[in-house]
Length: 212
Image (cartoon, one colour):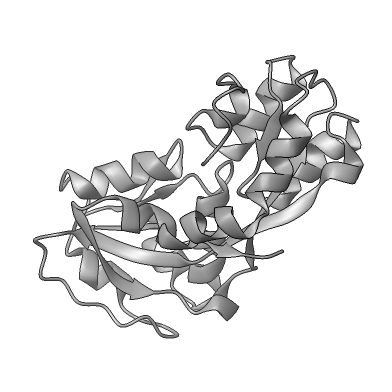
């Protein structure tokens, strides 16, 4: 995510799941901004007084897609009751751990709403974060994976096979907030910049949608 060069890398900038980052902040890891892939983890910090409530905003939206290795010829049409297990052809479905990773939570919800989760659950590889799931597909270790649209667009080694209907899962929202312990004078300014028109152009180029 774009950020001011004057603000040093902190826990909020690392490539980890939202749950991991939230718990790191709770345990005192230095962070100025937190952008979560799931509002529940922002709520988690808010309930503990670890973010500045007046700085919180819904920054971005995203979509959920089914991806395959770029050279794969697999074709899938997502619809109620679709044969995802058959499309795997004995392989595994890579996705974030539904119990801990927002992308996995959204993915499981989508599959449940489409009536296929129970059939495919035994074939799921539960990755520690969505990028790890994406990497399994990119390396050809999994024939299919469920990731965010933005992640799929960022990796030339995968292709989007199908897009999950937006109504098959809760809206994917990335809230942003300044942490309560931030002492950096530029943190609030950066938070405002990330909500600006200039930042929107960059975010949208990488598959996100601006919510405010």
